[in-house]
Structure formats: structure tokens, C-alpha cells
Image 1 (cartoon, rainbow, N blue to C red):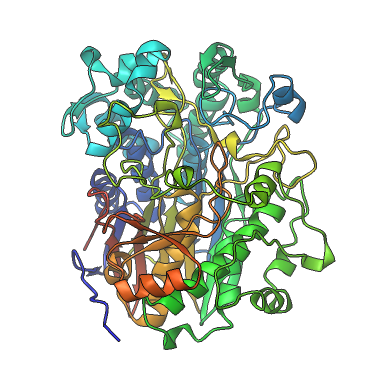
Image 2 (cartoon, rainbow, N blue to C red):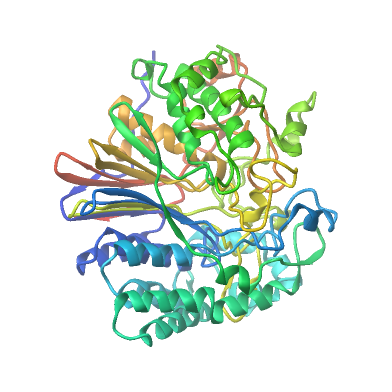
Length: 616
């Protein structure tokens, strides 16, 4: 049997002082600068997170959201910061039905939830950080005011929506089409309106006096009950064009912001191969990672060929079962009783594992945890009821990288045939470990430049996370006022003997808990270091319903980097997988930090050519 070469693009970093890894080198550098000035991992994570809002505006922004998982060494505490904003008070099934909609649009204002990211970073700083806000937020203000070099994917994203900016979203054109044209990759690009927003928040914070906690609370009030909330409320009440081809006003109000707070929660955990793996609750897709582990615990994965057909098949079929349960059972646990104990139980997963055969399954098969009957949204039922699937449509789903067209492997935005309103946003990620034993991992997203118009007075766009709700009544993920959407954002923190061992994550929507699972298994079972595990050829299933408008599913589809061995591809096709080759370095953008053997380690993804790890 041929051996798959374990090529690495860069070394796994090692040191003892601190490590930062993220999807953009400027964010990693800002996080490291905070560590160097004496801040801890939580200070560094917030600084990196704010910088990502500036330098990756196609992947996240101040109008978006973020889940954070951290471990505070001093308290011996592992925690989740929920920075997922809730649906507006006016967001009901009836409100959308009254507009003639059966899906929440993927662009415009109707999909806006409360912007949760800013509040989440402030809560992390208040509870676990040490530095004043100025020392954390200053890096983002500097890049927004003085400029930063555009990575190619930002230029491609702007190009893909340039026409809608010019025709409909004039406030976005003013920011992202300076002089009327698309800024070229490498251009030094600034966003003075965003810099002014951050600077005013900081000014109001420092006006509260010298007490750090008082400053952070004043900053929160400025955002959620002050000038930022006021401008958001005014803009959301205007009508803008969205993906439906019609103009709609939003449902979000200033009152929705004023009544929302980021919250601290315990993680959901599962013990696997000597590690305790911690994820967010089922308001995110995090537990699907744990369900996959529970299913795969019944196999001797270490005895399989890394990247071989049997390994890919078992992982893919397990993913189909876990994601089917996500579709049927996950939702905001404040609104629905999610049967997590049953979903993660040995008995349930033994029963589910028996469904996996040597052939690829074409079905969506949610289980019956605790004997309950599953329910599915209409879009999910429709996708698997079709006798035949449209091959042309199936080519549209792919890498999860916002700069790559999955059908062609070519950069988006370079074609006259680009479909601006079909463009999805993507996500960022960051991980930090410090010399005191603190570790934090976060996956910021939303507020994408390409999915909602810029608020002129603030310099950023609202998010569109409400598109992940269903409008089918009576389901765990059905939209409701004050409810969190079942998001795809899913950082991971694994502990060994109660101490943080490994923190990691990736952009990629529904693929996040697939790509990171493969990385985790590569590291744990096949002895790959962090960089080897990241660089190893990647794959994912597109079988499950997409969380993004228009909520497609492509039963049996398996996307595989073309670096996978030909004999493996042939075996997968023999098993019934609809294998689609993707460019050799296109799937996933994982970054990670680790603590082991009294050392710190870090690695970042070469895919996309912008992620970097740094440390010493």
C-alpha cells in the first residue's frame, strides 16, 4: 500500500513564553505584542479578535458574533463565553411569512441578530483579562485608521459584490470601492469610520474614570445602550435590497441591543482517548464534534491508514449521522430541551454506529434519543426526497474558503459571471496560550462586508446569522424572539488530567467540525505534530443540509483535496461516495496551540496564504 507523504509547509512552533495562532498574521502579531507587554492569553485573544474585525472584513466584523472557550489556570476553570446575539423581539415565523418568505434571507437586514462579538470580548476582558481596554483595542484602531494590506480574498470578495454596492448598497461602495474601483490585493486600505467608532467607544470608556471594570462597563453601554445601538436601530429601520431581489427593512432595534448581554456558560464535554474535549452548547454545532467522537470510539482508528479509504469512509458516515442529529435536535437550550445526555451516551451511539455499512448512505437519518421522534425542517426533507439530484447544482457547494469558487477552484470575483448575492461569508479563528497556563480559542464570524450594507455612521455591516433559523414551526431551531440561532461556529479545547492540552478551530461553516475532527484524529491517533496534522490532505462531506441560505444539501457528495491518493479515491467511489476533487490546498484553515511536556506549541494553516502562528 502506498504511503501518503506527510509534507509540512512550515515548522510546528515550540517555546515556553507564549503562542498565538490565527487566520491572519496581523492578528497573530497583535496578540503576541500583548503577551510581550505582560498581558495574559485572554487580553491577547481580545486584541487579536478586534484586529480580525478590521483586517478580515469579508470573514467577520463588529456586527458579528463569537463563541470563546477558555481555561483559566488560576481558577482551574474551563468556560464558554457566548457571544452569539439573539433574534430581535419582532422576529417571528409570522413576520417572515407575512413577507412571503419560507427561508430567512442570507443577505440584507432581515437576517440580523444582536451583534454579540463586542460584548463577548468585553466580558472575556472583564472576567479574565488584566490590561486596560486601550492596550487591547488600540491595535484595531490603528489598523482601521492608518490602513493595512488587503489580502487577495478581500479584494475578490469586494469584486464579487461590487455591482450590488454600486446599484443598491451605496454606503458599502463608499467604504470598499474607493474612487469607484475594487482595491487591488496588497493595497493599503483604511476604514476611518470604523476607527472613529472604536475610538469613541474608548473615549466614553475612559471618561468613566480610572477603574478598569468601570471602563469596560462604560464601553459595553456605549455599544449596546448608547450611540452604536442608536445608529444600528436607525439603519435597520431603512429598506435595503437583499437576496430575495426585493427591498426589506430589518427587525433589529436599539432595544434588542440594550436588553442583551454576553454570558458565561459551562462547556459541553466528552471524554475520548484520555482527553476531555470541551465544546459550546447546542446553540452552536459544537456537540456534533463530540457525537462524531462517540461514534468513532467504536473503531480502532489507529490501525487504519491515515487518509485511507476506510478511514475517510468511517469518518464521513459518522459525520452524516451526527449532523443529521444536529438538524433534528440542536437549538437554543433556553428555548428547547436538547437531549444531549442521550445523544452522547454509549448506548445511543452503539445503536447509531450499527447503521454504518461498507457503502455510503444517501439518507439523512436523525436518531431517536430517549425514544423521541425527530422533526426536520422542510428544506431538509425536500433535499432527500428527490429521486434524482441536479449535478449542475451540486457543483456549487464546496470549499468553505471565501476566496475559492468550489465549482472551478478559481478565485471568486474574477469573472463577469460572478453572482454577488449568492456569495456567502466565512469565518476567522484564533488560539492563544500563555506562560501561566491559560489557553483560549475563539471563532469570530458574521458582519461580512458582502452580506449586508455598511452602516455609514459606524463603518461596519450587521450580521446575517438569523439565516440559520428555520421557519418550519415547532422545531428546536425555529426562529423566535430572543432566541439564539443554531450557529456553525465551533472552537475546541481539549484537556488532559484537568489541564489544557490542545486548542484549535477553523473557518468553514458546516465543515468546521469535520476539518477539525480530521486534524484532531491525525494528531491523536497517527502521531502527527500540529503542523503535519493541519497540512495533511483534507476532505469533507456536503451530504448534510447547509446552514446557509438557500439551505441546500447534496446527498452522497464528498469533497476531497486532489492530493489524496488515486487508489483511495477509487475505493471511495466504489463505496458509493460522490467524490469531487478540490484544489490540492483548498479545504480548511485550521490553527492550533498546545501545551505538553512543559512546552507550548502552535501551528497555522498555509491554505489561503494568510494564517500564521507566532510565539517564543
